[in-house]
View (tube, rainbow, N blue to C red):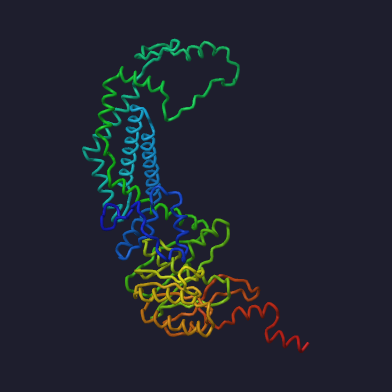
Length: 507
């Protein structure tokens, strides 16, 4: 991360390609929301490059933990505001037509930069940050930078010059169409004289008839001509302005500029998490491993759907995930519209967020640091590839199984729906056999209950309903896939259970 080339967040303007699984898992929607108000930082590319090494993940965790300290977080937000203000000033410089005005804005931008850097260095010096990035590299770098002769000279020259320019006074005499600029000679302020004269006639509050003159960044030609005359009257001051402007073209430190952009990744994600904290939905730091496949996640939820529900005031349902003792594949079945697809998306999102070094939704999590996530969700038939839907499914799955490794994560949702139940079961068992042979971790949403009992490495989970009302609870639990849970709920609702029928017959 900061100042460490091996961990630097890449912020190239050229975006890496979006991973195939982003759309299936709705990660694209979540990322768009996370970075919505930070488009200027080009953060989309950061979210498209997951980490593959455990130490890199833990490095990011350290930064997130440091930012839990509110004074530091607020200081970094303030730093970002000032750096944005500096960039706005520089953008304004490019729009101005009159040299002296442009140069003044440029020097003002440098002052904003100097103040922002000094303030951040002071906060870091007094903060109990512990991460390798913030507590070591960045704090040491900023301390040395602020104490350097180059920065001190720049800071002092900028302040001295602006103070000198601000102290310049002059008077303007207008006679017909002639304008004369000269040194200010302590002439009386006639506005003050008139106000003092009429003060004794004041009777309570009166309406202010003065015209408010709007100030625009761009000067008009008359103001520019006045400024030219003022420069002629004060040649030394304006020569210093010319000199400092010419010498400070490279004032912005590249490392600090990089930090300003990198920290937005963390601030954006923290801001996203804060919304869920308001409804008592939490995030945690997952324990990640490059080999351990004992998977655990408590009270986790779909971050994309969760955000939508949050915005409309609906509840966000949490679920648990666990794979242990050689278990590798979760097979989810049960009632339609019961949250099975959302559960599978949540499963994939957990591994993705863990590989980004981000806190994951939930109260506890242990996850494999995957090297790739593969998804297979139903797609509309593509007439351009001249393949039927079944063949297209087979081609896509073949590519996945050929590319997957034991560190891969597989998310499949309702495949082989275009064929008969018998053929679907036959093909599904073939795919399951290959997936188990590869030792991948995965989740499989299916209407074929037989898959849930394929072997010891397969875990059966079902979507549940409230038996009394046949309402979907959106809770996914470990249970055998009998295919009867929803049917029994309907039977209870309409009094069609064997007991109910016997009771009516007897009566």
